[in-house]
Image (cartoon, rainbow, N blue to C red):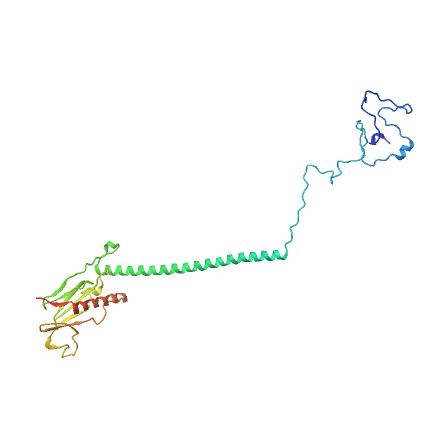
Length: 305
C-alpha cells in the first residue's frame, strides 16, 4: 500500500527543533529515507485499520494528531447545502373549523345579508313614494298653468290687450258712490264689493233698469259683466203703477219681488233666468255678481229730489 494514500500513517515532523534539541533517530531502528513512511511489521499490518473513505492526496504537511473522522458536518443533513442559505420552511396546513365555528360564520353572514336586503327595500319604497309625490306635484303645476293661461287668453279676448307680463294686466278701479236714475227720481248706493257697473233703461213695455258688474278683486273683465254681450243683464228693477198690483192682468205673470214703493209706483226686482257664462268656474263668479246686484236693488234704493 502506498503510504501517501493513507492519512493515518505517521508523517515526519516538519518542525526543526523542539526545546533547543535536535531530534535523533533511535539506535535500534534503521534510518528511513526522507519522504517515505516507516515500514510496518507483520503484526501492525494485521491490526491497522483500513480506510474505506475517499483518497486524500498528501500535501506535504504533517499533522501532529491523526484525524479520526469528520466532526464539523455532523449537524448538516445535506453536505452540499450552503450553510449561509436559509432553510426553506414547510407550509403549514390551515386549521380545520369546527361545526360550531361554521354555524356562527353562517349566522353572521345571514345577518349581514338580511340587513342589506332590508336597507334595499327601504330605499326602494322611499324612491317609489318620492316619484309619486313628484308626479302629483307636476300634474298640479300643469293644471295651475293651464288655468292661468286660460284666464290670460280670456282677458286678452275681452279687452284686446296683449298680456305678456304682469304690467300689461288691465287694472279695474271700483266705482263707488251712487247710480242716479233721473227718469224715476231714485238712486242706488253702489256696494263696495261690486265694480265696473253698467245699466240700461228700457221703457218699451214698462220702465225697467237692468244692471251688470262683477265682484271687486277679479283680475280680468268677464263676459257676463259686459252689457253689450250679456243683453239679459244680471238683474233688473221694474217700475209699475200702484193700481196694477203685483202681476200682469193679461198674462197673470208676476212682476217680481217688491223692493220699494214711492208715490204712485211700486218697484219690483227680477233675477236672470239662465247663465250667460258657459264655463262652470265662471258661472260661480256670475252667480256672485247676481247676488251683489240684488242686494243693491233691494237694500240700497232711495228717492232723491
